[in-house]
Image (cartoon, rainbow, N blue to C red; front, side):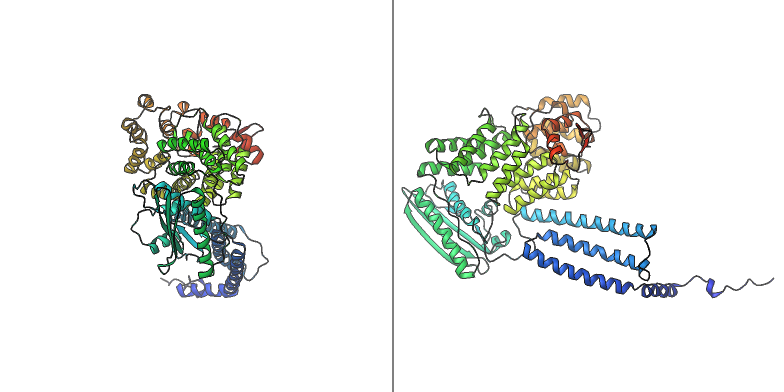
Length: 612
């Protein structure tokens, strides 16, 4: 039997060493190393130039970060091109090469999207907690004003001492070149045991202003001291004893603000401007006291607080009809009262517009009054009256032009964009709201809702969980189906219990509707009477109908924070005629055809639309 023919070396499968040699020969022939190094050199030059432009033009860090990620994504693309075309760059790409590059770009895009989404969520969580980004050094020209201590004998003048501190904060916030922590962020450290350096670190500032107020008869003593948190040393302190008049109060506040700016300028060489000092726009101490009480209740929003705030502020403007800021605060109280289920006014929206108009007649420079006008226009649309989306956004833009740190204006504009379906614009304004006031919980929750409706569920849940851990409750019901879909029954109960703990029977029915496949039409029929649309919180009532899929029984009037229109967790709702009728009733398609449709909607012919 003859032996089999010998295998020629050329026909042999190459071993690992041969394969590596062949790859290396290909790399050298196609000059892949040179291509890669050349790209890295160009990318470094572009990145350095972008950094210079970002510093000189004050570009946001997120823009530079995205540009860096795109440059990194270019590395595997260049390597792929060199592999195929390093030695013959004039050749056209074939289908295989195009597919490889598209896969690389798709994978890189997914990684960039996940990275930026996670980064944005983490930044928002830190912002809502009142913390700066890791490694961020506080600028020398930065300050936080802590709530002043109430040293009155009765201990019931907290609203007054808060008012003094807030006026000083407002003076400082208008100083060019000076970073000032927001009221909400600073005032969360009331009665805390945390030391000044740690508070400053959490707020991202270099300096802290603290003080106290003592009212005794017809005199007032205000003490203030400025602390350099870096060294924990006092830079300046002063005590003011004056007869108790509004002129003296504003004079003290202005003097404190001016002295602080002088200290920062002389001690640190910080380039800051002069404080824009407001005038005392009422001469009556009693009226000013009513204003401070009403304003404090407005900030500490609850249904009873808003009712009492309206009463106090009406008393203030009745006694001094020329007190512009009292009119402005009254307008702000009235415009949100309907959302809290108050029924003491016949027409809250019209009353709010009238109060805002009066405030601006007295002082055209006010910002919040313009914001009230803006959100009132959106409310008129919700009520089926003659409101205008264009006018709403124009008034909110004017409010922000007059005060770029007006967090309420950012919040209300985010809500307006959200209603119209412009989710990306809403997200940007919610983030700006947190930039202006890093502890404004409603901005934080609005951002979570926007992320949820945009399909970024993980980011939304992280934001929501952080707020929930701090005890914040608002529009929680819209996260319930997400928890149910993930099998998180304990989390689902936690969400529902915060919204419906006063109605255990309704809570149980809603829980069953989300977890029990046997929950049917008869169960739904028995649960619906448990919702009292006349007396329940409007958001809770709307959420209850939505969870029970009783779309046809939803209240005809929906408010501007309603997230349900754009939620995608319920396919039946997306296809429902009720959803489409709400969009039409709010005259959104009319605005879209003039200004452009949101990404999730499209025109159908000349008169119809679809938002699948």
